[in-house]
Image 1 (cartoon, rainbow, N blue to C red):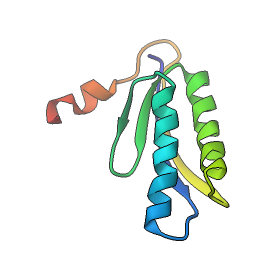
Image 2: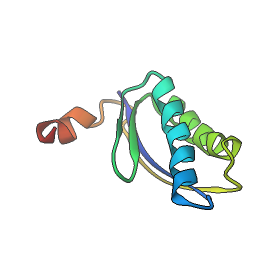
Image 3: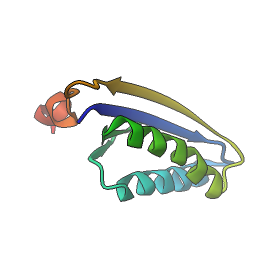
Length: 97
């Protein structure tokens, strides 16, 4: 696994219920990709090939807008190691769960 990406999707929404509904759609999309992922309280982390993860990050914005958000902001963290393996989710936090 050459990359790990953490994305926090922040769709504009009129209330918390709508915000959570839209974020849930984004997370459902991430889950549907088949890559290993972990949902945290502020962001979702995905592991896999760099280019595919960048496509997923891009699509997350489209998912939020299609779900009804008039706009969406995102914070993204990327760990990329083209000639090796990045530290996995399991290695980072497995001992805590």
